[in-house]
Length: 257
Length: 322
Ligand SMILES: Cc1cc2nc3c(=O)[nH]c(=O)nc-3n(C[C@H](O)[C@H](O)[C@H](O)COP(=O)(O)OP(=O)(O)OC[C@H]3O[C@@H](n4cnc5c(N)ncnc54)[C@H](O)[C@@H]3O)c2cc1C
Image 1 (tube, rainbow over the protein chains, first blue to last red):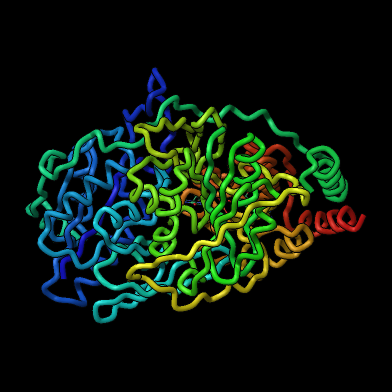
Image 2 (image 1 turned 180 degrees about the vertical axis):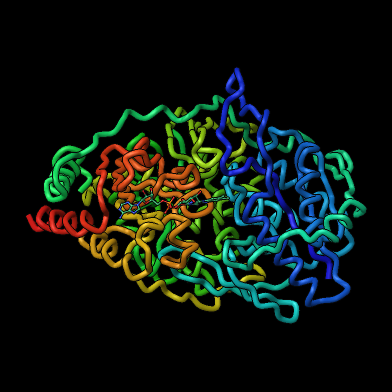
């Protein structure tokens, strides 16, 4: 089986975000970069599937500036076989990212399954999985926390609203976007870390895959930090008085109850 | 006047509040508002969409549309959009909207701004702002190219308008032409709590590690039930097995924007704040006066949640009964 995983490199969740002077983006100096957490479930799922199907290969793709090769290497160190990096600008939107990933995947001889995370925790748009699937004319099942593999089909459990779970069947090939709960990602082992250094990471430019920067559809501008919050009101007194006063405020002043 | 096309959402024969938000915003701005409603046996809901200001409701009914799939729904919506040529297409950033809208955007080769928390109409354009880096910053979205402008709006961001039963929509039945479908919903297993979803509720009562056990969450559930609220949790509470992951609020959980967020025994880690900072009113109860949650809270009580939550339940009950 030829299994592919699309991953994104994102700032660590602890990062304090600062803006660049003209507010056209964030100041990336000093940022610690990690693999987006949901993508770790995607990588793990690919590795488990490979273990059940000997002879399979797991290829990890990431589109972004050259720093994202480090994220690919991290995935290789957990056991993925090879990587593909597609060079796109830091400011690429979801469309351009998806076109780049789909363009690289189109060059592969056979794609059986593609995994992604359900969203990247920096942009949080949850667009890329569906966009990649559409550009490859493939079905996509998102927010998946359990998969049963059949013969040329998959049965996925996906989370929908109200705590309900939907059971959806899809033909293969298919793109599956992982939700937390799908599995427990493994850590890189020392032998794998050493092996990862020798694994191939192919580099592609947009021109190699028939995509251009004009495929970008939106641009972010006028970045702002959230306005500093006014110090809130502390409610004092004994617990009964505090409870009475809070409920009074929420009902009579804030009018939210 | 712009033509605005809205993806209406229903589940189990009930329209979503977030759909009313979108229709209300477009129609009150004076735009020609179209809505599309898909499902099986749903045409009766078109009237209600009219009360919120939809001018035309396009209804597509088919057994393959009973449950949402991006594949079947986009096969109906994309040709319809092409025949109407709207300037703007809006959906909710709900489990359905966030899955469907990128499919539509890709098929129309046009830009999509996801999870917007601000929306303004300007001529035939929209001005939208959305959070990035889990709400640590916000950005304005500029659309490039000439296609329709697509956006999903975070539920509760716009507010629900008052319906006007004097208004009515023209209902147009469309017969869906579905091609090959590779995806199929086999079953939906209902969540059992009966409480609203954390992302949709207008009040969320959340608890953290300090609740100490799954059983202790009962006091928050009881409070939530008095308020008609959802119960949320911090990651520490989820990781400890007190609550399922679907209740987790934060950067790696759900992003919520209710009118009231009540954080009980939650420290206010940066990843938690990311999930609830756009709530309209934030209340924190914490024994530690230095807890970071107080920096974001509009109202704070330094105290023990095990004492305060039952007292609050009593007080809220009195207000509700009046
Ligand atoms: C990659 C990553 C992603 C993460 N994503 C999320 C996320 O999505 N959501 C999330 O919530 N966290 C997330 N976290 C975890 C986050 O960093 C915190 O660890 C977590 O939010 C802490 O949960 P807590 O507030 O319940 O627990 P603690 O930090 O342990 O806080 C407990 C609080 O309860 C108070 N307390 C104790 N007893 C009482 C009492 N009787 N009455 C009142 N107050 C009391 C204490 O003073 C303390 O402030 C993430 C972390 C990482 C690294």
